[in-house]
Image 1: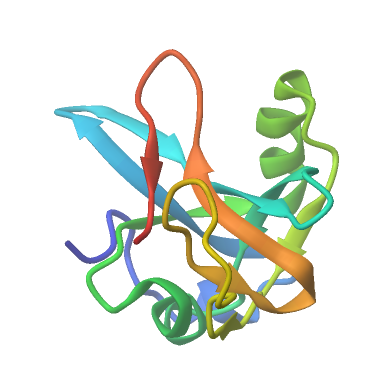
Image 2: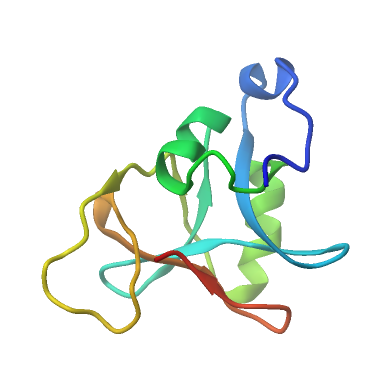
Length: 123
């Protein structure tokens, strides 16, 4: 699907600007993808470049540019107080888990977005 925002060089150099994966639910509506730590804590996800995001989600993943402070402002009302920056994909756990979720380094488990708009998880 690619980026919904431009890939300008300033986005990779300006401190605090992150490439945030999204799920397009319907025309004009998108949901920010979040993750869960193994502890169950839900976290925001942000990447410092489109290439780092593509390592985890693939090159067709939609994303938007969001400043870290704005991302916190969007997530805090949902009870999400932590953002994982540049999580790296690792092999899934061999034991079965409810749902099939991609696992991330640093104890990051499921990736998805929950709320009134849509739900999504990687397989």
